[in-house]
Amino acid sequence: MDDLLALDNQICFSLYAANRAITARYRPLLAELDLTYPQYLVMLVLWERARAGQATRVSDLGARLRLDSGTLTPLLKRLASRGLISRERNADDERVVTISLTEQGANLRAQAEQVPQKLLCSLDIPPARLLAMKHELNSILRVIEAREEKGGSSA
Amino acid sequence: MDDLLALDNQICFSLYAANRAITARYRPLLAELDLTYPQYLVMLVLWERARAGQATRVSDLGARLRLDSGTLTPLLKRLASRGLISRERNADDERVVTISLTEQGANLRAQAEQVPQKLLCSLDIPPARLLAMKHELNSILRVIEAREEKGGSSA
DNA sequence: TTCAATTAAATTGTGCACAATTTACCTGTG
DNA sequence: CACAGGTAAATTGTGCACAATTTAATTGAA
Image (cartoon, rainbow over all chains, first blue to last red; front, side, top):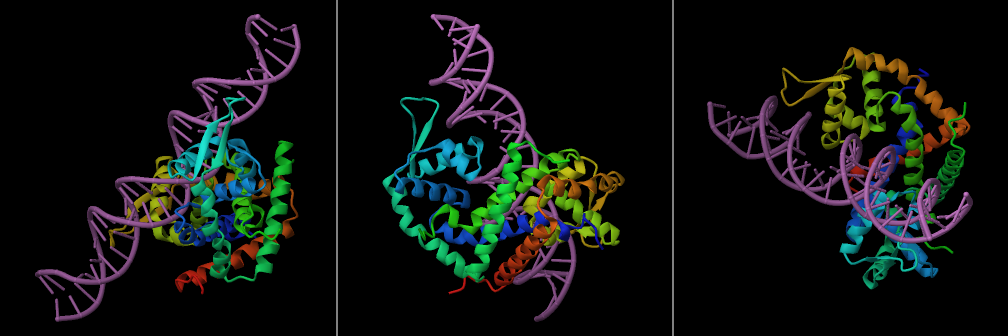
């Protein structure tokens, strides 16, 4: 049975299933913050950049999370309507929208700090193993994204 | 810098990004078959079970792909409207819907056979490495799903 | 200066995911 | 038989992803 088409032989299915399973593990933890998983990722970037004193544009979030404005614009509007962030057109370049944390949004970080630890407990997998896996995934991601620039489907 | 909240320290983000990157690699290949990625997964299960002479219910697809009827019902309706599958209520248990391949759906397998090979080329990553990764992902998936049954967020 | 080309974000439209509810049907017990 | 309890799929509603187009602003030549 060396069937390349068998579901169990698709790496991508393992990735797809594992991703959804882990996201499902996050869900109850993030529900306490009233955030979805993509919203949580956006907040992580914003907290990080705020600490570094960097302003954040929609396109910065897009570059970091590999998401386009079609995904981000409505997501950011929802975060804004909840009072966690503000969205402002730049004065010197009206095309650009700058995203800033409100005080409430900045304060949410304290609660979020417990999420990674809780998730690790909830997974109950040796952290070293998760770390190794993360490196492997990142390295694969780099390969894929490198090829993307060269437009390339090989053969 | 041991900040657990840093985006780069979230395993889940690597998983999320890698999953989307690989799915994006599939997209042009599957577009030739006029299938989305989840539709492709459903077809894989159907081809596999048809070969084994097994009938397939909506819930079988759900169990295999970890998807519920909320996702599957509309997806299956789209496949049916394209003539790739048929959906029929069971005679002896009217709650159950059996999914069968049409001739057209069965024939599509021939074209799909080239997809895994093309994807491997397009990724240009040593297959052994992908295989190792798949095993690791599956093993993590098993741990998560085992805990799920016991309801369990640890501590 | 003028206007074609670019750029940033928003909009539109399709298709997942998934929670929650609903509908229809089956099964077992009294 | 009646009917409570459970099961299978469908429906409803929200929120991503992402392709494709649009809007508005900026830049850079000729």
